[in-house]
Amino acid sequence: MNDRHLSPTLRRILLEALILCAFAMAVGLSLNYRMVLNAFTGKTVTGPKIFNAPPAEQSPTAPVVEQAFPDPVELEELDGLLTEGALLVDARNAIDYAKSHLQGAVSLPLGEVDARLAAFIAQVPKERPLILYCNGFGCPDSFDLGVRLLQEGFQEVLVFEGGYPQWRDAGLPLEGEK
Image 1: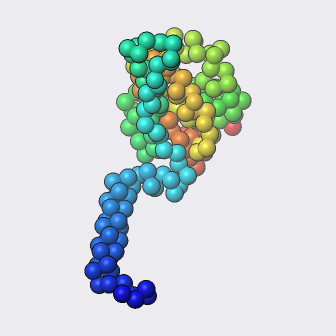
Image 2: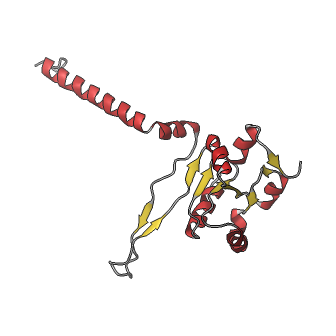
Image 3: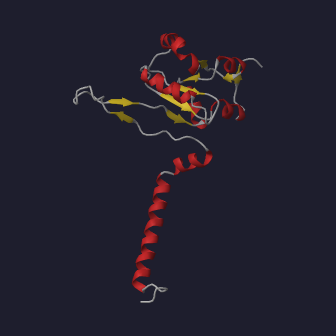
């Protein structure tokens, strides 16, 4: 066999392997299309729930603690969730909240959560769905606040990743100083 030419059998095998890889990639992308679209638009993707192993000093039979993360929610889904009684929670600082915030939102800044959490818990039932937001994609405050609220026992915590900028740019109602 010449080094420059592949045998017909080897060509066929390589072609079949290439077709199989292309088919597998097409199936994988079609099953994960939302994640692919989010990646191209700069949106974050929520990772899987992580199970922390018990520390070495604990008994190996100690229960495994589940670490929960808030789920993302899109702008198109907000109207239905708000109609069903979800509460908007602004994780931005109090100054930004006072200037302008989503209509009906309450303020719970991540930087002041330790001081304000007890009052928030006293006013908001843990069964009520919460929709957290901050300054849009790339702002981690709403996600971090969501993790904290889940640790405090809130059952349904969602993060509107587009946050204030996406709401404002969509022309939806705002409140605050004009």
